[in-house]
Image (cartoon, rainbow, N blue to C red):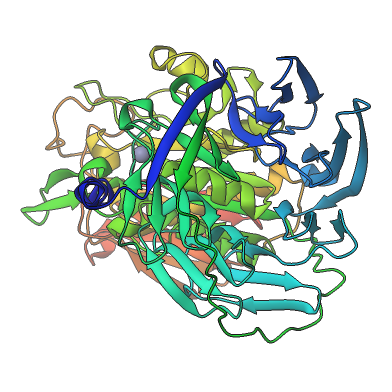
Length: 628
Ligand SMILES: [Zn+2]
């Protein structure tokens, strides 16, 4: 809320912009509005990008531009008055292919301008016309498009007639978004996730760094309009507002009332359109002293634009939920009986360990992976709208949000839950239900834990009926990737909370995700080795945690137990040990396929040694539990 406070404080000092008039253009359920250059047409999307509509603001007539392949969210008008939009479809191996089209309001017809290709396709405003950029091919509306800018992960591309300039002005982060060239053609603004809103010259030298914001757009060469980025961890877009800031951040003025929950600003000339609560599109006319004093800045080192950056690798976007050990992180302490100490559990820690493990495993299996955070600090807890935008922008083939669940009450439940956007059985994005089924089957197959119930799969609109029609999870709203949010298990089920504090147990969930993801994409032979995992418990003692009666969770886990892996010849290959956090979990990675014996030595005493003969398969887990 720092920004809101700053904005209010500064509002009294200066009011550079007056909101001259306001009118409602669409009553409800319209998102990502775009006003045509002549102000006569409005383009907008449904909340799930399923329909792209065009409204004639003079007659009030509404026509459907497209309703196949999620055409919404990123469509734009060209300077020719035509509509340019991107659709997506699942192709071979469940890869997502994106194509670009142009719709002519005069004829009511669409035609394809960029054929379906793997990876992201961006529709970008240029100083003259539009540029549509894909990895395999580009399309421009005008012979000389002038300047345009876009981002890929933590890189800023500025493209002109002389070539492109590639820089990384904000350094590495979860990704850059919403790059655009200033009206005077000398600056670029973009958001670096978790770091702030940056203004650079064309060569990537940072001129200004402002607080984080979403969807920044230039009003003139001295002002940017953006939406606040302060709903850290909140489920809905409540309290967001649109404001104008001078480039140095000294003058900040709200343009909408926080009660309107305004989002998604877009500017043409002195008119701004945005979305108010309930999807109402409003247009305001602004009156201010226009500044056309564009600084000159350093000239970029232009390099030739490569014809193709094509990569056929399957891409996955991972979002380890929460971050920063603060209030929305569900901090839940527990008393460790073995050590006699209070141990903190944070959902953000286990989500992060699972996500990082999944990233490393997938990369070793030949995937390309983007992840929404590289650390667990407050600034890593990105705005949910921004995470959705990063996911869409990545052009990935799959989105996975990693969480654990809590009942919040005294019910003792433990099972995996998958939520995708839409109604149960009717996901908004094709493929999401297949992903959910693969992932739930592989999480449920984890025998180091105790499940009280089978896994469950829901559409989030069905699962949260009290949130309002088509509201659903914040991180899936405006997210067009096939995918889901996983609540891998329940961290308020005490035995499970102890397991989630074990690094190997978190790694195992990441590994199980990876095997499920291999299955969804039909990729075989991605990993030549297997995993051995299990849990060691004591049947002869009562659990210090009363009421946990399911499976073998009524008895305590054994700490500090040594386990050995022997090959068929009886040679001890590796050993490991259960930790001191009352979970009894052990895990052995990178085990070559074949026959082995697992020995479990509970207290360095031959009488306490148990063994079991196992067979390890590639890209699979062999579970081997021990009880004393
Ligand atoms: Zn969570």
